[in-house]
Image (cartoon, rainbow, N blue to C red; front, side, top):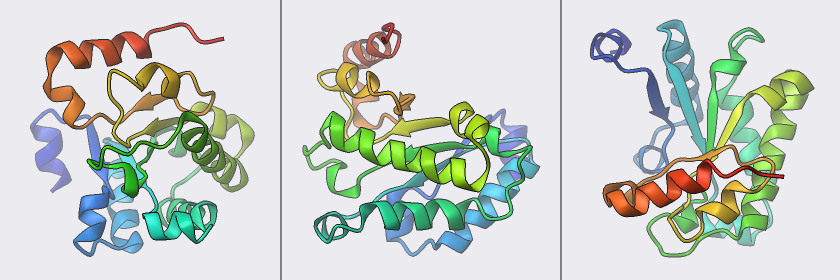
Length: 176
């Protein structure tokens, strides 16, 4: 199926979205898709995230580390820089609840630490980590100001041009 995406002019592909995981997509499925995307020259946007139950049980870091390790299994040192990782706290998608900038930063920092352990500091700095939990025009600036949040995976907020422009402007703000 990757050749159809490439033929259609696709450059990026979202893999492991929470909705797909909810339908039974496993970490092994996600890993196979990440490898296939990379082989086809596509940029995989690999999603990871925890449920409210997992967050309340205090296993967010371990859960996400497991998703990253399994999802990136077999991805070479040469190809890791082409992978984008998107953190989507499942409990904050379409619920109106958003992770605080501090909560989002903490998880994205942990994601970068996992990549650092698997690959290197240089690769960990080079990859993009996106936040995808109900980012909108009101919270984008504060979320994108966090050191380990490199961008947003925008859902519903991208459907209203005026609001989307505000998110784009927030993404283009210089950070300290």
